[in-house]
Image 1 (cartoon, rainbow, N blue to C red):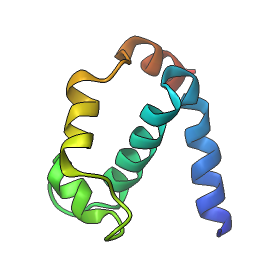
Image 2 (image 1 turned 180 degrees about the horizontal axis):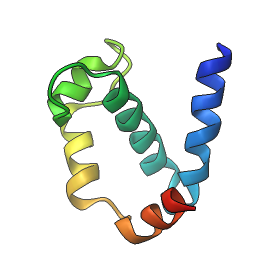
Image 3 (image 1 turned 135 degrees about the vertical axis):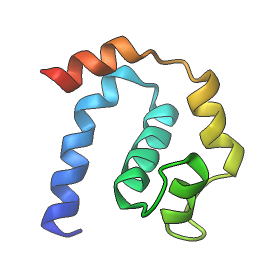
Image 4 (image 1 turned 120 degrees about the vertical axis):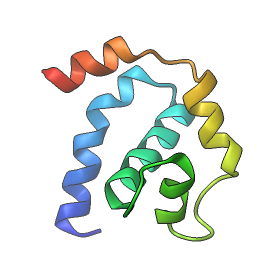
Length: 81
C-alpha cells in the first residue's frame, strides 16, 4: 500500500464509529470511488470508478444510501471536528 493510500485509509477510519462494520466497508468504498470518479458522481458513476471485480452488487450501494442504519448528524460532527 502506498503512503497516500495508507493516509487515505487512516483518514476514513475516523468515521468508522458512525457505522456498523459492513456499513463502514460500503461507506469507504463509495467515498473512495467518489473521489476517483470522473464526471458525475452518481452511485452508478462511482461503481464504474471502482476496480472491476472488487465491488459488490450494484443494489448494495443504493441500499446502503437509502436504508442504511446510520444518520448524517454524527457523520457531520466528525467531519467538522
